Length: 349
Image (spheres, rainbow, N blue to C red):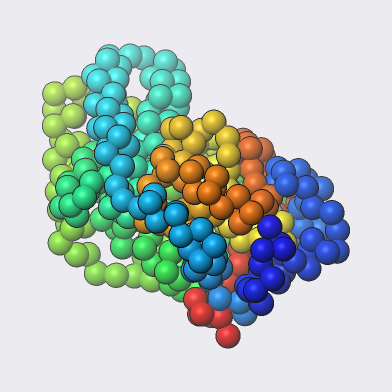
């Protein structure tokens, strides 16, 4: 893979230097690969955002990847089926006692709602249908089982995460300075992981506040209306099953491992990581994260084909377990919220 980057000076130089200095395993879950010191600040890079550069290189070497562009209707079917499953189970558990309700909320609702969150991720790129309005309608629909409006706001900020990966202020996916300084010990990092939905919900309002637009307002009207209907007809426990799944599925849950796995710099010099484990079947292949950032116009279901077409560009350390990502982030002393790459501009210096 490094051999194929020789015509990209500066973009992946840290990885080339890293490979020359020591033998790096292709298993990103291997602790011997990990950084050797806990960072006291973010890693500041003068290189441009790497994915646009690699996209141009891949298109030059493998123009056939363009055949993978375009929406994937089958993923839309999976999304709709998951929403219907959530409401079906919510009705079934409306009279359950607390402990069984918690178990089914963690095991089923959290899994389904995190899957739906990643359906919203695909829909933010208009990857299910050919028309924008249909993708938007499906985005609102996929949002209903979570109990809160997320789709409209997520789409606004997520597209900036792609165009400005790592750019200070603009990429709100990156933790704040306060998070980096505060959550350093294993028990505080455990709290940080459990409360990930809090940081992801409120961080954009602090670092890059935006006025609510019409799409976001519509999302809240639909979400609150759905919550009131569920509460009126099925009661509080059904509503707790849905909302609780959204909270639990974004915290200490294997499905939520992708939040950390995608861009936390566990290995110095690599800022985006792919995950090739079985959970990709539930999360629209968002684990193929290098591939996704290189080609956000390719739907998740086709990203394995992209990797097969251009294998030399993806021969780099990758994850096979989200549980291990969570475990290592919490218990490895060298890991903390400062393990992210920042830059002043997407174009570099």
